[in-house]
Amino acid sequence: MKPVLGVAIAVAIAVTALGGAAFAQSVSGENTGASAANAMSARQAQAAALGKLQAHGEELFSQRCKSCHMPPVEHAPSRSELAAQFPNVIADALKTGKMQAMAAGLSDTDIGAIASWVTGQAPDAKFDLAGEAKNACPVGAKFNPAGPSWNGWSPDKQNTRVATSTMINAANTPKLAVKWAFAYQGGRYGQPTVVGNRVFVTSSSGQVYALDKQTGCVAWAYKAKGSVRVTVSVGKNPKAASGWAAYFGDMGRNQVAVDANSGQELWSVSIDAGPRGILTGAPALWGDTLYVPLSSFEEGVAGLAAYECCKQRGAVAAIDTASGKIKWKSYAIPTAPAPFKKNAAGTQMYGPAGAAIWSSPTIDPKRGVLYVATGDSYTDVEEHYSDAVEAMDLKTGKIKWAHQMTELDHFLVGCPPQRPGVNCPTPNGPDFDFGSSPILKHLPPKKGEKGGKDILLAGQKSGGVYGLNPDDGKIIWQVRIGKGSALGGVEWGMAADDANLYVGIADRGMPTLSALRLTDGALIWRHRAPEPAKCSFEGRCGNGYSGPPSLANGVLFGVNQDGHVRAFEAKTGKMIWDYDTAGRHYDTVNGVKNQRGGNLDSNGITFAGSMAFLMAGFNGASGSSGPDNVLLAFSVEGK
Image 1 (cartoon, rainbow, N blue to C red):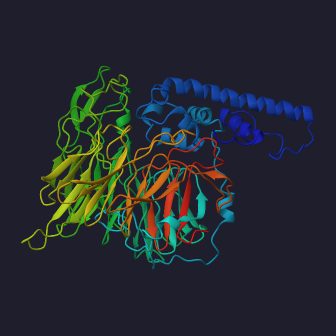
Image 2 (image 1 turned 90 degrees about the horizontal axis):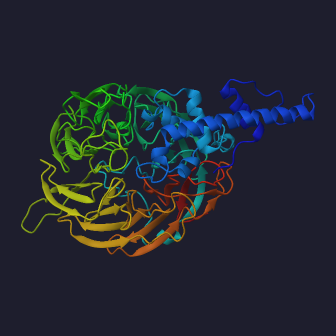
Image 3 (image 1 turned 30 degrees about the vertical axis):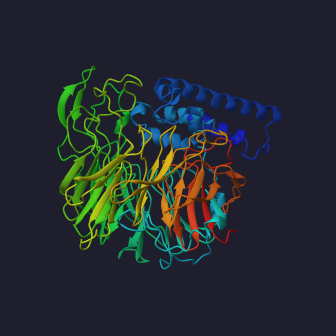
């Protein structure tokens, strides 16, 4: 667990949260005239107040949270993983995030009590941002978009994850070393975007940063309305003073545009009115339109007897980049939810629902469509759009075709065989979402063929990988390279060059990184991740390749849950570099000493010029000295 605040500060906040008196003494502890005995008595009273608050939090945790976060843990972070977070991260999850359903009816004081007990800190304890202010970029430093970049989820709109402007290759990859590190609270999801001289990162704390690529100094920080877990996309915008804007969305379903140079907000628009919709996939920018995918946290309502399950559907919203006006919005399931039965408590249930879009859309200008992959269904109402790949018209959003890979995958967290719930589908599905973006590739022509054909590639949590015809979604080839599970199979992404598709598998017991031939899915090579040398902290024990691989000049970089980023010759699978981000500590440019790295999960490594960028610490690391992750900037020149 992270060190708590000083006793004086912590108990003052706790007392305030309980409605008691504030401190009579200064925070520094200087005596203002009261006797030392009175000061000690006040501290003891305030410490007792904090203890009372945390005892209340423990009671609420047992009632609301224990069944999912204490062993056996299957679909949720463990109690010790939660302890590594900051209180506001826990509170945000309960107020506006994934755990809204579990917090129904709780007051802010109740939520603060849970957050305080789970983390061992005062309810609003946060990472000290003073170091960021000291590390501000020089006055007058401006954003320069020229130069090597990795913009958004992939440098291209086909989501191949191939670096297009880097000098990193097989010869110099072993020379990669950390040039600088930046500690910040709650990064977890937002993969680093690099455009010109800036690096853009997001955080579950709601802070969005623009950093100098060479030094890590803070050019600006924007405080979003809620947690942010998307990857930033950057593009030209006539309304921005600099001519460029950074685009990202928060967990409150707000899509935002800010000036890429100053961080000044240009516009903010709500994508959806549903209380459990969220934005997770990077927005895809094409021309003057931003395509924003809508996901959902409605999977967590199994045990809420009074909840009208379920109404949330995945969607894509097309937004005008200059004005923020929504041009069109298309739901992944075209049929609107309607009443279909009542649950055991007599509450009306709705459907169809689900088909959340977790990942960034893939753009196909030639066909005038975008491709998305969807998650599972939430209800028993039959539909054919969950666990599917879909093609939508770029101009209208009309679904051109949809190919469902797993039928009847109706799933809610907390249903049998895990635990009973009044809203559970029957039977509860295997939870085989598509969490990764489809990849569009052009195949070389066969002998006697002119021009060659295109192929659309998709990977599923079932462990299945598919090659589809982008014209109609029909399967060209399919293979199953993993056992698959709710937290296994293909999780967050794949990569592809002109020869192979590279796929990470997160399965426990068989975590692999494989190269499959584009034309037929044949296995070219496979690397199995070694067992972790030690299980030194929570989140360090897994070794699945759940994060997305990246390619740079014939080198494949895979990120692993054990904290290792490994580089392979893409053609042969020969390993040429292995760096353990979690086994090291870093003194950061923003003043955090001895910050430990952590495991790697939902984000890959990105490249620009001679540098590479990676966020380490997906689950946090108990015992670290401040925030729960660190952004690492590598260079072939090292320090």
